[in-house]
Image 1 (cartoon, rainbow, N blue to C red):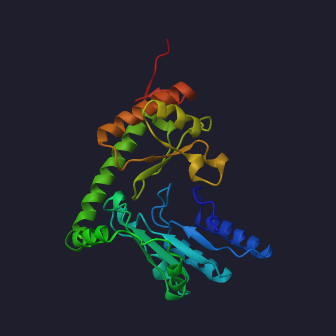
Image 2 (cartoon, helix red, strand yellow):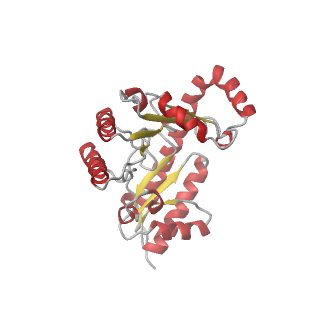
Image 3 (cartoon, one colour):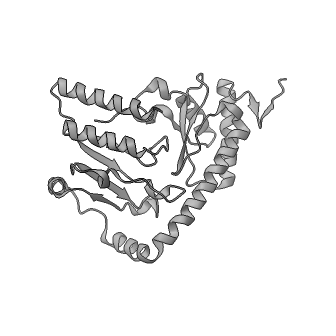
Length: 273
């Protein structure tokens, strides 16, 4: 059971929706398998669930007897380094499955992660393994690196990512002006952007890709297609600062050509021939 997450909602609004969905399932005699959530630097909105909302989510999960799957893959990437308490740590019902990874903080190619769960749940998960898991060599290399270096590595990584998102936000402001709306994220590797309602980001994605710029159209990241039609996700982890600036400039030109947005470039009205 997954709540429609990518919409911006108040704490009471989000959990009212979750409570309604759980109540509806119960009324229909359906037992949800789990509540999947990325509470810390949610993908794609980069929002961080407040502690009060975490408490309410756990209360609902216990009330309806539904396990929580906590995807904690981005929590190392909060700029301040101060992460909120994990749902797993807050749970008194021992019904939270917590998963983390080193693919965001060390290297994607490692594909090494970890899972933490109470033994009654873990004992049911282990027999479901269908392969040998991550390679032993990768795990040993990771262990050798992390013990002396991980704590010092993270602040440098956060600083580098923070600088990149600042470049991205500056470029969006310069190229799109007020046509691009977004919140300054507190961490992560992506920015969730709202363009004017007439922009279809799926069509924008197709047109921009022909110009060598890849974006994530909003409809691929939300259960509400109408809500996400004019939204897009921009990942800033891999590109250089120069590539970010050049990519946003190209994206703005493509968007202007396809949808007439933005009408302004570099905050200066473009002269029409």
